[in-house]
Image 1 (cartoon, rainbow, N blue to C red):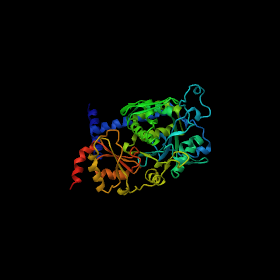
Image 2: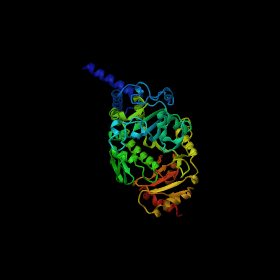
Image 3: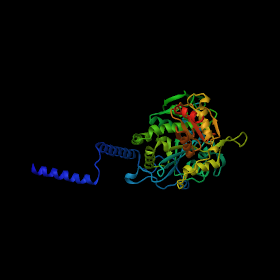
Image 4: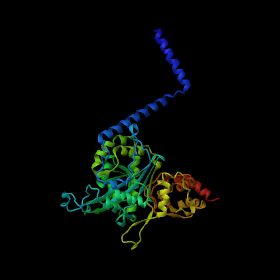
Length: 471
């Protein structure tokens, strides 16, 4: 008994000395670190399980056979860590994502069973036109993810084939020529890896993620018996399954055509990101890959894919920015076909602000008088109720203001959309107003630099603006 008491006294003395070196954490703090530790162990276990369950081959999801010259187009340097650091990005990386919509006439040897159907079904191939094109930058130095949508009708020089729509680059030379074309269009930006996903896989992927909660901006109805393409969606907030989400992504029969479709793609992407990029998704990665692996072609290794998903799960939603290649619709008879004509100056501004990893200095906000500001009401208000807002903007030097088509989704919080990627100017405008949230995306009016999508929080601030505009 005496020895036990002595031992206990010694232990108490040792603990007292330790407490003098560092402050003792609270019970809640100890539980916090315990939960963080257990969560980290669970995530690492899930990641390790995902790796073991899929494959340890260097490129297990790659289906294209690239020549050495084609492989050299992509930067082959390692992008993920070693050992226990395997799930971490080691440097900024640019990924070219292509969505493939392929019909039997698009390929040389279509499936035999597709010839007697009487219509043109989507087939699981990567040899057709790139219906969707995104350059995605994952940057661990700034903790940002930047997604640049390149319209499929963009007029671009395809090496060896002249000026064409950029979606034809995949037909002419696969992912390597597409990456080279995108790089040339964007002043030589490097492309590290590519991902091609067939449209059939998009539906499976969204289904595997549990569907998506998204606001359908308007009733959408379209019928094409030649492809058995039937779109029938009602406006409003909905939970869409994989097939319904695909209908929303493919619809382009409105005044903006493919540009409107890109805006809806960004809406769906943001919704998927907000509900799916979390540790739970990472631990299910093996199951998700198993569902879609036949519909994906990529030169990413599984380790690199996990590093990208892991980085995404830790990235703040405000640091996920969605841009669109600046340009304009071609005019009638301007070219041999209808194009999205790139705006070189505006592209240069986006590249300087979002894609130059070596340039750490922030660009200065633009002169307010030069900014085109669109106001899109989402509250159903009379235009007269927006006049105090317009007067406040004009007093601050924003002289190029116009009322645009209302924003369909009812918003509680006003969105200040940096339509052309100029987040600094959008932040300055938000500071002036004192309400709303900045979004760097391209869902606003395409003729604007900044779109103010007015939400219900405007009513809480309306009296302040009315008083300030009448001294």
